[in-house]
Image 1 (tube, one colour):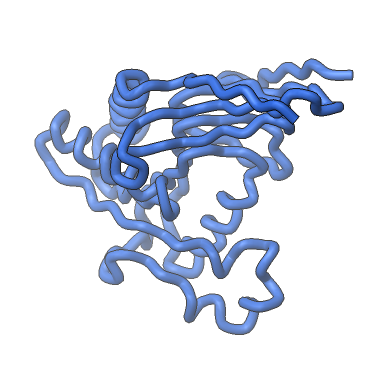
Image 2: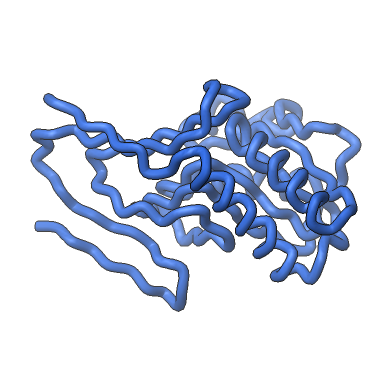
Length: 205
């Protein structure tokens, strides 16, 4: 099976998308009061850190941020973690409180929504947030759960045979979002979610 890879976001596009998301967060929340940024390991952490830095540049004030390991809450590992998953939860820094806060959750790619569901379960075990908002660098559609992002860097129509890969300077030495298509797949069903009132389109057999 042949594969084709295309760059859909370069360093400049990622920088502009994160800058826009920072402004959208400030507009939606009317500033940074009671806001906490939480990144899902691994690349979501660096996105949260970058957004925190951009907000500080814009507002001249720091916004608290941290990282969340959702591994114990993944629904494909419930049997091994159901007894002690609270003990396995890692929130960094440990002193970070989300109780009655506006939590903005960050991930690199939104796909089925199962990672986000796991993250929300983990957050609820850490406290009772005022609300939870979701920011992603790329939304590729194909949701299996009713989860929708509040802030999106780029909507990317994909088929299930395609893969979205995010590379960040902190982990990969460059900033880039790539789409890889496996040629020869029998299925070519495309879907995407578009920011707006429940607008979506599907193309397939």
